[in-house]
Image (cartoon, rainbow, N blue to C red):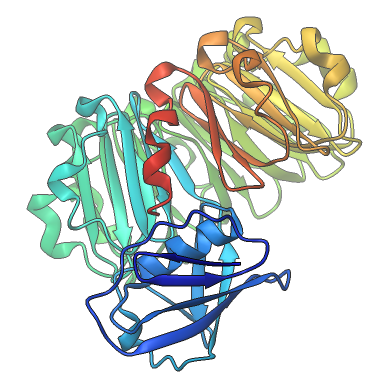
Length: 468
């Protein structure tokens, strides 16, 4: 059957019959094909003045999905372009891929970035109100959240930030924010890594926004990492430079001699310490001692370390043989002695909530420890935790994606540990994402399901997602 809606004619026998897209302003008629990697394709007739955004929206509705990315002759198309700019001829084929959106959250707001576009929701004071920068948020490549602000890297390497002015106002350094490769956030500050290996910071000075004392050392930087109030930069020569609040990891002088052959740094903006895997497989730690900054109790076990994960006051290390070593706050997962017999081998991945850990084993089973209220006790769902493919964490809960596309949750109900209200929707799930105190699941048809903190509920924005 043929459907004609606002200037588009779409021909696809398996297509949904209700496609809504605006027409262009007039131009040469084009008949193009849009094809998925699976071979499923649809033919669309429109005019050359149509925007890529509108063509993409038509294709999304034709395929019954919500997030597509279009390429032509191997080149990614920007949604702001018009078809007349692409050199298209009738009969040409555009390739479409279904993309997974990037979703990040501050303490009270959520930002979804997909195919260059951004949608925000939640509490305005925490960054949900992005209207002031709406015209600038185009062709977004990466988005990062602090506790109350967001920062986005655009395709041209510039940065747009918004939210709480104390951390989200980058106007003072805007001229320096060019060719940005990475952005990292502490609780109230941001650090941007530029293509030349230098670093630009902004936000609350006490949380790492003031890098003036180490600015001459911040050259040839490869990666940036953040704790709650400090930053750590891994340099090209494998050394480390730190700044910010000293007790939260801004002062690494006690381990500086060890940080000469660093492979990986671990922390996040809820943590007050850092841990680093060194080239010989050992670990160096610094920052708040009770929160994981002091690993002397288990230092003799920290050999052949492959991966590190952090809760808010503890660390967990996966060793080469698949065993796990933990340290830090006992009530935050630093003590795994109760389940150590299950952590002697076979662990392939660890996820962390604020005060608990969940380890995914090679056989698809799950082991949890830490605060029982925040996900450390999974006994109520243990019989369901089989054939687990992936685990995600919110502030106080976990969600496991099973091989059959269903989801199992546990932990604090208010943080997404109780998904019973949306259980009937959680089928054919393709991916899950923890977002502060809630979860988002992406289904095979491209739709989204959210549960947990009501501030993170995306259902009211369902009509906007088709525009991404």
